[in-house]
Image 1 (tube, rainbow, N blue to C red):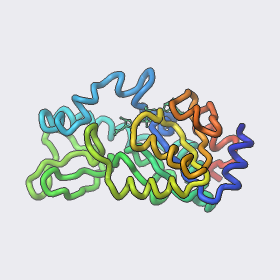
Image 2 (image 1 turned 90 degrees about the vertical axis):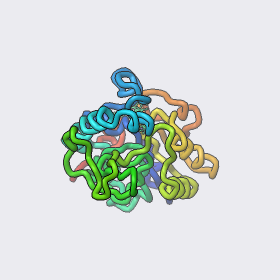
Image 3 (image 1 turned 180 degrees about the vertical axis):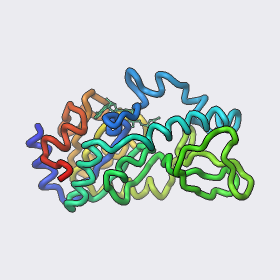
Length: 241
Ligand code: OAD
């Protein structure tokens, strides 16, 4: 199976990668679904909606500051490093992620399409200015923009739309992909989960890497049931060297 993965990567003309929370699991970042997933321990409607933020910005900020702490102190794992290496080798056209962490970038990936935003930025609810986050804010006080508006994490919350520009780029990439590797996602959140379907619609090959089955598994051309780090690095010889 890993030989097939290797062969697909080698012959791909336009290879893209779509990642989800599972790719950062080996860096110690919790996923959303499954046993220890965030959405089994926390209620998204209290922490990840615009309504929750209007109602209780302090609680929302404390939770995001905690997540920022975890992400900023985590290190890229072999999966992040392997995908960065593929790009460095000129094999990867585009890396698309649902993750709000910056572990792909810290592994060396460039021009990553962040479908769901990033914890490395805050956005003003009043003027829309974006401000980099170097350190998680200590709340209280709530972070405030120069214009006086409240700052919020620059991520996509439930009930919000993805950036149309980023989404368009991602769908363009998917439609041009002859091979897409889909790693570490439960493939239940749309529109991200529609990207592999777009690849299939255009006759491309979809390879899933996930220790568990997902709704995508039955339509994937190849399902590799193992952690992403192991599948990408060890078996492809794409180590850090
Ligand atoms: P999920 O938490 O839904 O799914 C994580 C997937 O990773 C599961 O299918 C696991 O089986 C798999 N997994 C776990 N460890 C893995 C490993 N080492 N290697 C490969 N796979 C592994 O995360 P996402 O699919 O990313 O949205 O979730 C999608 C969106 O739902 C997130 O971006 C977030 C969430 O609500 C927003 O915040 C808008």
